[in-house]
Length: 199
Figure 1 (cartoon, helix red, strand yellow):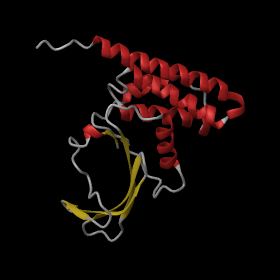
Figure 2 (tube, helix red, strand yellow; figure 1 turned 180 degrees about the horizontal axis):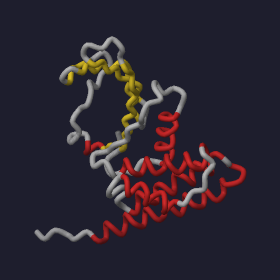
Figure 3 (spheres, one colour; figure 1 turned 120 degrees about the horizontal axis):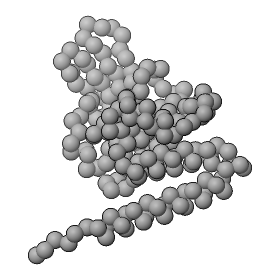
């Protein structure tokens, strides 16, 4: 779950937020077994038990936190993806990624993961635009802003530069500087375009 602080009021709680708390959703028992609070994430371990079933299902939910108005760092998103794909996962079942709209931040994280899987797990070539279009065909309006697409590229460059520091560190650092400058320029340009309110 990817959310800004301002999103918190709009999100309906899916589960009890404190360890040891439980609730019933119809015939489904949901118990928060554990909560690990990290600076940029809260990781919940949930027990889900359908009524009449003796086998519970454990799931992990990683709730990414970002300050209102601030973009998450590439490091934060890459760490979240590492947690999701780690051996520490409770189950090898499906992974659900969502944000308030279901397409912006969620689509960004999904595209980063797909590209990293192709590059490093499957050793397949990557055509960023083609993969983006495929994702858009499956998830309408996915990645809505230019900044989100640039964030995908910045995350991949950051990952490659970290994984192969001898070969790519210098190029990564140069790209990150240009990316930061680009984001700063966009922010300043957006502020200049604001129309003053007449009093």
